[in-house]
Image 1 (tube, rainbow over the protein chains, first blue to last red):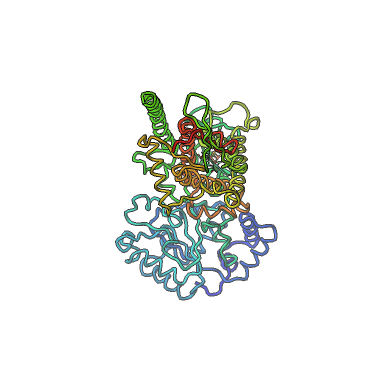
Image 2: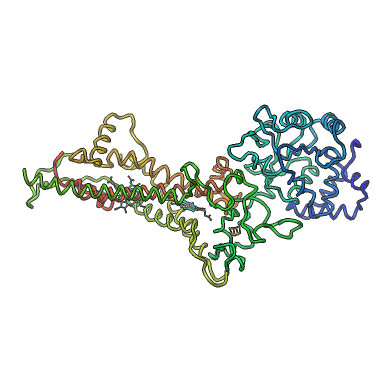
Length: 359
Length: 237
Ligand code: HEM
Ligand code: HEM
Ligand code: SF4
């Protein structure tokens, strides 16, 4: 690792032209929602500021975040940002292994104390002292805390690190726990999704490495630039929703016409993500465009909520029941009780009148 | 309050009672505006959750869900404004205007009378007592079964509304904290929906009891919510 090397020095060394570099700056500035002036500011920052080191760690996860990341659409982002990170540490894709790899962590911790970014994919299981996820001979939770201590900020990649995801599904035997419940004293930026969109991931990394600060976060700790609107708000099938035109069955006329998937349990109305604007695989498509409802993979608890239920099923009522079933049952019982009560009232009235008449 | 002892002329033992002014105009206006808004909200809310079969034709020529949602939001805003006014009236109005917002659980007399009401409704007591305002059972039911669920619906309703209005809307400024409790708004939809059923069950019982009391208990009930006056029809008790 070269000391005090700038991002620009680094990519030039990788054989990237200045022209490509400025292109990258304007593309990224645009995807982050900045005005035209920002591209200059970005270029300036990348040319003059010391390159920010990134450490990428893996806990309980499936590596889909990494898979997504390396498929980022802008070729420069893929090559540049990824190589910039892997150079430091990413146990899945770096060349180093074993002690050599662990040494990189020590070195980064020392050299970039309080300055490096810790990107975490997956989460630590806390049950049995963290024994369900061992990394480098010790529980991942210990390694996480150890690396987090000297980090500048933490990126929680994906639904695992942000919310828990499938390994935290009820009853969560390993007690898989999202990062923000384990690390309490560092700024944490959540980038949820299973996986998150590649351009969102590279956008976040680029923002932090460029400006040396976290992007503006919302109440849930997600970057506002990508997570402040729902899929439903920008869905291209929205006109069919507003009109009241729905797919009622998977292969019906409505499905062929591309109607709204609300009745098929689409979670677009409750899911904050950028799929309906940025889309996937370089803007080719996204789930709703290919005819399936959104499953809400960037939302807390999506793994337990049922992919095809727009409202959460209420397990408290013994069998699975939805809000309408519970409500109708209650209304039915109460209605029956009212009818019975009215009947008794009527009988009582008649009999008490008779008693009075007899008296 | 004394009940006038003039003897009625019809065969029944009815006694000419005295009228007492119970529900002031703001309470009555609120009651009916509120009832109307809630029926609109429940109907449109249900249709938002379970839309009718697809409409034919171009998407651009239809706006069915849009209208349901518009009616829901408009009725929701009306309901919220009147609820605030009603809350204000609880402070400046007469004692009966306060009744539905609290339960005097510290009062022994309240519980005694409550027990009597329970006995009356389970056919154990032969005669209902008469109350100028709400009876204790009604008062105890109104708070958990109506007032609290209503506040819950308004709060979650505005939180859901803020999702469409955007993160910079006043709705989000005021009600965004709901998303700290339930980060996934799917849960808020579910609870908002369940809240509707709580209120609907309340309304079923409420209307039944109002009609029944009106007939059985020899005091004016339904007309009290229109004229504001409670008329006691006989002097027993
Ligand atoms: C959406 C439907 C309704 C709701 C939510 C509702 C709610 C309420 C509430 C909250 C009160 C207490 C008023 C206060 O003290 O400020 C009340 C009183 C009353 N409501 Fe309703 N109401 C509804 C429909 C009706 C209908 C249809 C009737 C007539 C059959 C009715 C008859 C009455 C009467 C008579 C009272 C006064 C009870 C008493 O004298 O103690 N309500 N209602
Ligand atoms: C008595 C009061 C209310 C009842 C019974 C009621 C009922 C409902 C129901 C059943 C739904 C459908 C939920 C679902 O399946 O997703 C709903 C949705 C909604 N309600 Fe209410 N609601 C009430 C008050 C309010 C208020 C005061 C507001 C605030 C303006 C509000 C705003 C909303 C919003 C924004 C939605 C979501 C609509 C959408 O998904 O596009 N509601 N309501
Ligand atoms: S398909 Fe889903 S996200 Fe799109 S409009 Fe319908 S409900 Fe909303």
